[in-house]
Amino acid sequence: MSEEEKTAMNEEAEKPEETATDEQPEEMTSEEAADTEDEKKSQPEEPSEEEKLRAENADLKDKYLRLLAEFDNYRKRSVKERGEIYPEATARAVEAFLPMADNFERAAAADCSDDKYKEGVMMIMQQLQNAFKKLGVEEISRVGETFDPSLENAVSQIEDDNLGENAVAQVYQKGYKLGDKIIRHATVVVANC
Figure 1 (cartoon, rainbow, N blue to C red):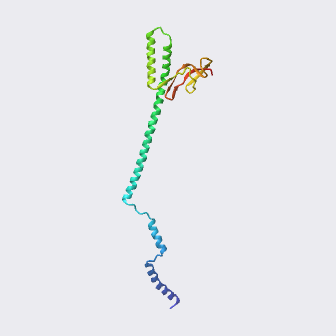
Figure 2 (cartoon, rainbow, N blue to C red):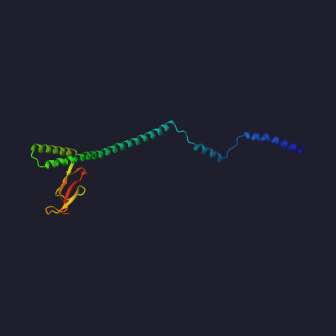
């Protein structure tokens, strides 16, 4: 037998042995076994049906509480806005009637020979003033008091020994306010500035 034949026979004899070793299970080292156990532990366990329902319930409860808080905030904001809109709307409506109130006051102060006519003008003026009072509108007419620029507009000044310093001497046009909101500033003459 030649060398080549011997080598070929040896290779064939070795092949079955290699195949036989491939079929046998390999033994794991302790490190490999620990790694396999860690992989099993790191894989999340499938949550049970009860846990799923509890999580869903908690999520729905959270959404409900947020929606409830949001609605409560909306309700409070709406009440606040309505509370701010009403005085503003009232002030605008009253402001539209102020020129009529001024004209009725001038008509009531004018000399008239017809007493019935004067009485009618006075009644209308009184009705208008009563309507303003029902709405919470107050007149700003502070003759003799200290001038307040937040309530009055000064159009002129005079010297008067009977009045104090910066006192309102005369009111040309009455002012009106609704609560703290000024509808129209009073137009006044100030003494002793």
